[in-house]
Image (cartoon, rainbow, N blue to C red; front, side, top):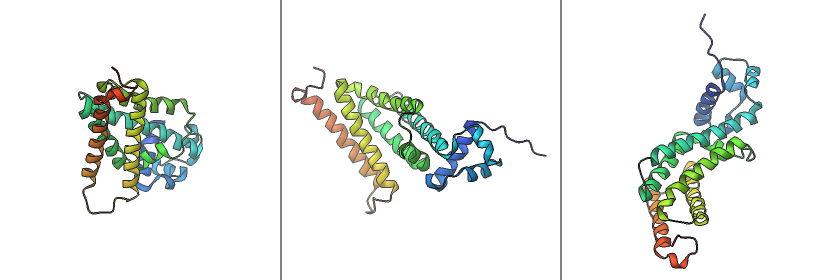
Length: 199
């Protein structure tokens, strides 16, 4: 008789991640997950608060993994290189884990403290990278929002198959990033026009 795997939350989330990455978040069910784990569905309730609870855990786990991707990419880099590296890591994460990435954006409970902490870690990482440009805190947040809009917008359109023209998508992304970075440099060079750049 084969020994049964000791079930814990990490094993559940790993299998759930595999399922949503392969089949999409909308096809996730506790029944299918239990079948894949070779357990009875009620056993999942020892670790989860139903399907919505599972999706919330996936959202938190997804943001944490996204942070790890971005952090590893940015380590040892600064300024423009760091922005490019963590941005490319973001897109790579969304491509490798399309279902898990979807879980991070598909209406998770925004009041969840663990989710808030994970999201804040991502913001703080980008703010830290932007310190190389001597932006004041408010301007740094504006630039974080801008970068997030670029990254999430690009990945969402790509996921929907919205880039239909036969032109290199990665080159488009590189041009987009370069334009964003040039915008930061323009703000720094023309700092007299802005009150949100260090003197």
